[in-house]
Length: 79
Image 1: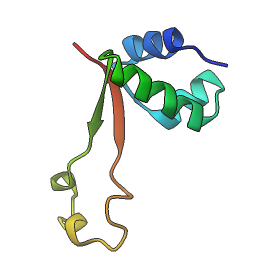
Image 2: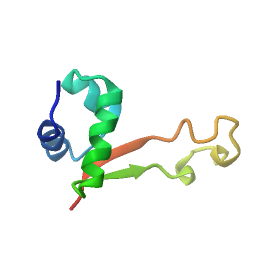
Image 3: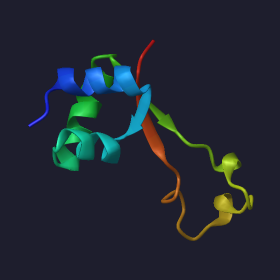
Image 4: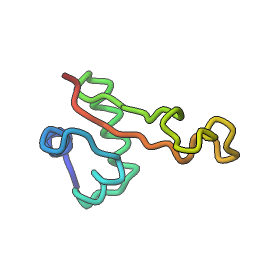
């Protein structure tokens, strides 16, 4: 099982990562990684970076029936 320190170290090495990438890299279930990332965020150590729908190549993400399901969310250490 991963620790908060391992998540912090991996984010420091990679710059930013998705929760799914962290889960695979640390061989830890994603719900556990999600909870740990939220804890790091509450402690002021990590920040959530959400993709803007303006980055969509077709420009139709704002009206997509999937809503924001295709938008990626990254995590990084707070500077």
